[in-house]
Image: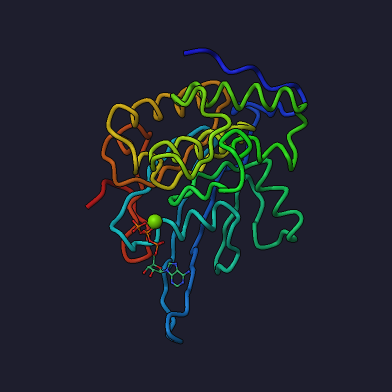
Length: 248
Ligand SMILES: Nc1ncnc2c1ncn2[C@@H]1O[C@H](COP(=O)(O)OP(=O)(O)OP(=O)(O)O)[C@@H](O)[C@H]1O
Ligand SMILES: [Mg+2]
């Protein structure tokens, strides 16, 4: 595997040894949706603590609230009750601008539905996070994007339109985009959901490599036992609540 070009000092971050706060801390976390005017508690009191550099699988049946939880952790949704701190910051207290900046600098998010921008090429999609910060030159950004795509088995796809790709290929583009700035927290919703077993192993190896080099904290929502086994531990969501342990 070709090593990725190192990030310049501007985006260097302290290693795990110098971090003192939890990467993630949720206490009594609740998320209520209104469905046809009726309240539904997608999360009904979740307690989770994840330390910097840990790798945690989040499992549970369809509808258990996994994506709802990731959307909160990924600072995409602030409509929660209870406490939710990411690297010590209570997300609800941040302004919109602070939240956008926090998300760009601290969090890489791989969506269950990928959410690539169809009007942009594969390469432009991967380079997108650098448009909002990161301190890299255009040349460095492109070099990193190309190296990541190569590492994920997508060499020569830089100029392709994502609409012309398979689900598994788009999933890997989404992973490359989340890794571009090597954020300290990587949140992945079913990162191998559209992949064959071999490509899934390749993705896990890339995630393990980033984690080893950068002390990245990994949260992986998954139905895939191989992904869950790759994590340090598993948290199960059931009925909108959390419990340590294996999936049902
Ligand atoms: N935007 C929304 N509006 C209303 N209800 C929602 C919304 N998003 C999710 N829900 C409800 O919240 C519950 C949890 O949904 P969520 O998407 O978090 O499940 P999940 O565990 O990610 O499932 P899957 O494994 O199928 O992806 C479901 O009952 C769903 O109907
Ligand atoms: Mg989901």
